[in-house]
Length: 104
Image 1 (cartoon, rainbow, N blue to C red):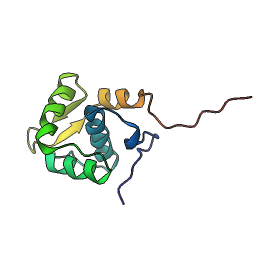
Image 2 (image 1 turned 60 degrees about the vertical axis):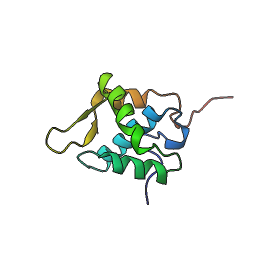
Image 3 (image 1 turned 60 degrees about the horizontal axis):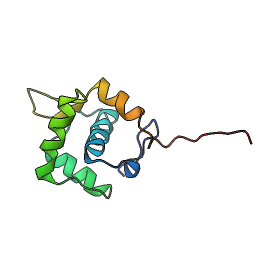
Image 4 (image 1 turned 180 degrees about the vertical axis):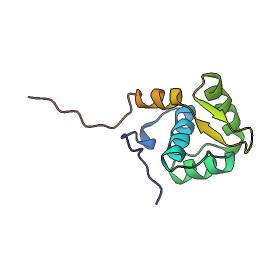
């Protein structure tokens, strides 16, 4: 089964923008100790999770993430990977699903 949340609690379904969804997918690959993803991997994962990114949109969203230094690409394999900056950005998103405890 494909996880719908990252280890730190970020839920895929709570993300709004395709760029954030692509970044989440790259973070999942890192958590699963993969060396990155190609476009068809991203299309399949995002579609399986219920909010797919079209193949012809993956490269556009990746380029925007790369410009922000949130993702990079292997020169050997061409696989896309999340950077530490990308992980920090994801962990700061308000859609993060962590329980909040309030004393009443």
